[in-house]
Image (tube, rainbow, N blue to C red; front, top):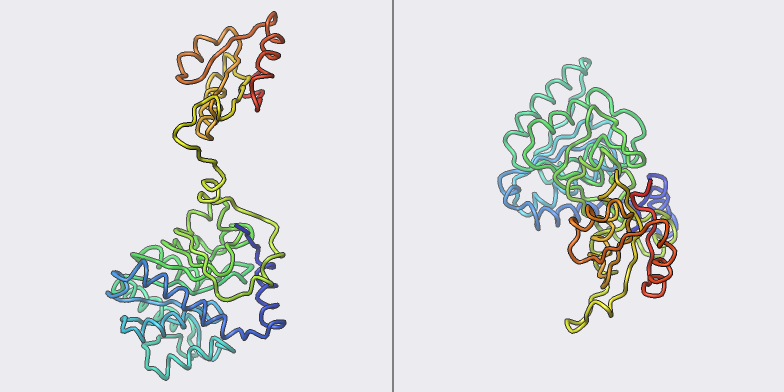
Length: 340
């Protein structure tokens, strides 16, 4: 599967909007619906007990507001917390807020006040209470565009999500995680049970320790055409089903001499496990015959660790003869595992 960094994903978004004239509002709607579908298929038992959607002021927050609207229209109890003053919402996010307002979806936000710190503290305290009352939290605080620390206020929100939330779905990316490097833009990123990312997985999801915060990763199609997507990424991640598809399975009447042979030359007195592990890997990959050539001094040790392999020992007198013998028998030679 192709993997993108921040700039590649932003370029694809931009080209979709500018070249194909698919409005950003349509992409936002599709993104929110994709998250709703994941909730419907995987988290409905929790959603029926209450969903809390925590939004930032940008497009990621707009995605979250779409999620809230569709849950509300499906009679799922939902509340929205916008970690911003309404005056700071712009473009698509402001449009989504106005729709929620017209539908009378419960929305809480930072009130305009000269004492901003007090309003932020009130917001945090109310948020903590609501996290406890709701079984599912949707994290739509910050998206892939963030390139620096989230700041003290957002960091407190993230840490309280991690401390009190039972189940968390992150929209596109766990808030506070850098999608390029996997570094943290908060004390810790949101620790998601599930991340619904859009179009492609992002590079940072597969790096340590950030992958510990992603949870189950679901890649959702938000109608970005393949003509836009196909040539951009140059990084791939190999998924389990892709490995399984590449393994050839054989009829039950096949026997080992028809499945290919491997010769493994390796091991030393200090590293007896290396050739044994290599031989097991060969069997797991459907090799029929596996031959081990090991130093005479460790022959007994290796033999005691193997079951199906044919083990030969070599010394300085017979190494070349053995190698010539097996060279004509096998299709693959692996040399060097554990040799000092």
